[in-house]
Length: 262
Image: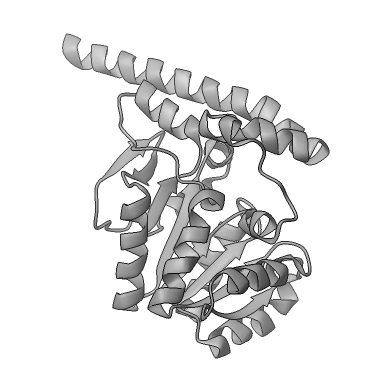
């Protein structure tokens, strides 16, 4: 496995992935810090689905541990961390906090580029955000359905837009691998993997009742909204994640017992 980058804040090591101990305000403060210091930083999230992939995909695992900020998106991570003796202040789901973040981006005059989702979705999300936040600078959008031979053209568009925050929503682990391969060329202060966020911000996907969202059942709402695409991820993936957490806990306990006996 690759070595991790130097992080500025506290993190936990959860199943061999370093995750920041950060709440919503702390996350926003970190983004502000990154933008103001201009050096290119990679921001990524993890949830149960991401952790399952990271156990199988070494390249993705290394990319996560080479990012400058990785935060917990999903209540499963909070519960799993607690089971392993760690603390995370709560889940940070972009569809929850991003509308507030965009309002603050508008106040601070930050320039944002939105890359990802199906054709027209990022553009629709940008239009809604600008209606809600007069003065918001969304300096460009592009869908995420492009081929590798188109990368140079898209990267050039992002560079010309002079974005300070580039949001990449193309699904895990593709978006993280795209960020890793192109971040040095783009050289924006923040390059941020955001998953399906543009679908929610555009209104293409509904999130479900707030009562379910607040009590750890967003996965069920997602499953009901897109059952054909997500049934395997949530029905089998969540069980596999639980198995990984349980196996990790047993392994850690056995290692502690071996040290005590030595």
